[in-house]
Amino acid sequence: MNIHNEPAFYFPLANGKYEVTAGLNRLSQDFGNGAVDQHLLQFDKTFPEYRKNKLVCRKERLSKYYQEKKYTPDAKNAISRFLIRHLCTEHPDKFIKTQHNQSLQLECLLTGERLHFNRAYEFTRASNSNLKIPYTSALDALACQLQEDIAIVQLSNSEDYLCALHLCSPNHWGAESKIGKTFIEMHNPVPHMDKINQQSDNMLQAFMRRGSYARFAWGLATDNRLNHHLQAPAGFDTQSWIGRSFDINKPELWIRLERQTLSGIQETNIILFTIRTYFYNVYDFRQQKLKLEQISSAISSMSRQSLAYKGLQQSKNDILDWLQSDDMT
Image 1: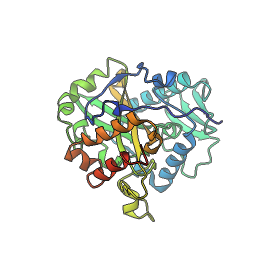
Image 2: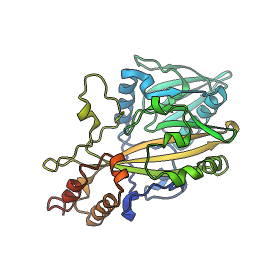
Image 3: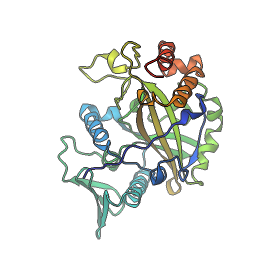
Image 4: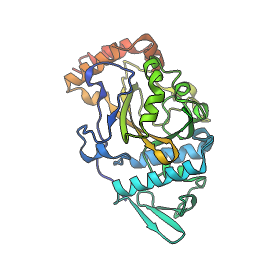
């Protein structure tokens, strides 16, 4: 089955500022992409690229990209129910659930696979699958049908910890270093997170009562590779793998944007985070003066700490010069 629709477009740089805020929007908010904006899980014609990336990551070493810690059976089953319900409700042309007496089957038309579960939504097997590395769990199987990455946070006695993470499009971080950590510990390296950290307990608890939200995070990249794990795979040059090396003589620059959704699942006191990565080629904005000005302004507004965190401290001036050059204007 092929998908023909273009990827959604989001542009949180429109205010011309780089800000570290919660930036929460109701999932029902319209960002100009029609019904796609209300979908928790989004699909478009780039699906084969995301699927291929996940399979390559699994082949390299699954534990590098998929981790669990204190991920309870109740939480696992609740996540399976939640994801399957959204897939079949939002995308009935792509996912078909068939209920039997003691089991259910999810037919995934994009991959041709059939995922089998028992009545408690525990994963049992996959059929019509030619994977060399079989799925190890429901989360592994379901995540490989999506373009999003998945993170699951467990709330317990006013505490929180990351109990599961399926992360095949990491942006300079990795699953092994984050699993089991609290919200504050996970975001420790991010500059200017103080206000969000102070409110994190109340914010996470609020998701249990208020439905699903979407937020956006962005940075700049010098390639459009999905997998930017901190550790390069065997056989790759470490420096070229890291990227973020802007060459003004051969300029290539992308906005790397993450659409993140957050949904509370009350019966098990867990929060499901989805992370969908988008790339927008900055050169494609060359006829859109306002957007170029907004990008330049947002880069100029970054603090030294943010520039260092985003890997832009050495290339900031060259990027700004290029954005204002004859090639772009």
